[in-house]
Amino acid sequence: MKLTFKAISQKGKITIGELNVPGVKEAISYLHSKELIPIFIKEKNDIINEITKFLNKANEKDLIFFTRQISSMLSSGLTILQALNILKSQDLSISMQIVIKDVISQVEEGKSFSESIKKHNDVFSPIYVSLVGAAESSGLFDVILLHLAENLEKQSLLKSTIRSALAYPVIVIVAIISVIILMTIFVIPQLSGLYKNLGVEVPLSMKAMVLFSTFLTAYWPLAIGLFIVISYLFARWIKTENGRKITDDIILKMPIIGIVIRQSILTEFTRTLGLLVNTGSLIIDSLNQTADIVGNIHFQKAIIEVSNKVEKGVSLGEAMSGNSMFPKILVEMVRIGEHTGKVDESLTKVSEYFEREVQERVKTLTTAMEPVIMIVLGIGVAFLIISVITPIYSIINQIK
Image 1 (tube, rainbow, N blue to C red):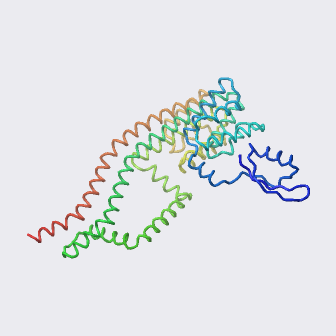
Image 2: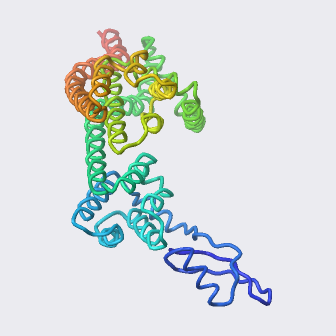
């Protein structure tokens, strides 16, 4: 770890420099050995190092591999420090290797594993840290980490499935928009000049494209500026509570896609809640933690509302039953779990049900999107034909 420091000697001389040591503790010891009193010590903000870390950012695969390997090595009888030292030499991203080295230095200083990973919140989520802390307390470190690795794998697979389903329509829509923009910039101005010279009446759609083309070609800096400003304002707006409410509501109400998103949120919610309950976490704490990961403000508020009711003594199933965000099957499974004393198992089973539903919906989405895309393509082609070809027929008729 590269650290910058500012220290003062016994004679009052100020010294500023850099150290390459495992951690702050070692830096303090080194400065004391040189009869220097540290004023401040902080990690060096190396621009090249930061760029390298950004380009080699730790990803889901790194985290899954890290979690599964730690679990496997702990079950084999290795200590957490031995497991980390083995992992630091594995083929992981640069960022993950840096994280592991930092965690090793903190564990060597006497900190727990959960405390050591807590500050790396860009890699380890609060729920991950909470589960690791529960694993340390329960003595079932390897078992809980194995469940956590499986949970992460399922989350990653679910996200990948949804992304794959949405990739095709997004590519087609982007391609259509790109073709229209290219024609507007390069083709329409040429045809517009030709039709004008020949005195041919053009349809309204062509006039609209000519107007748009004139704006883009004559005022392209303004067009780019407007696009940037609108994008920035929209990005700011959707981060506000009102913006999130509107956009999240639209997403959930979209045909087919909205159902897929809703089911995927329920899958992640029930799976994570089940995992937290299984580790012995309090149901209220578990609900509050899962509320932060659902990614939809309406579900977030619904979960917090359930948490508040449970805190007042209402059972989990009863608290959920009064909210339309939670389907009947989830409520009934939770009630069964409460009666049998196995809420975590009920939540795991219902998460598997929602996961199967998502997979089926994704297949339906993929099938349903094909005719929709064909219709969109047909409308786009028809618009271009009416705009461009109709005046050509007018010219041919004039010649005849």
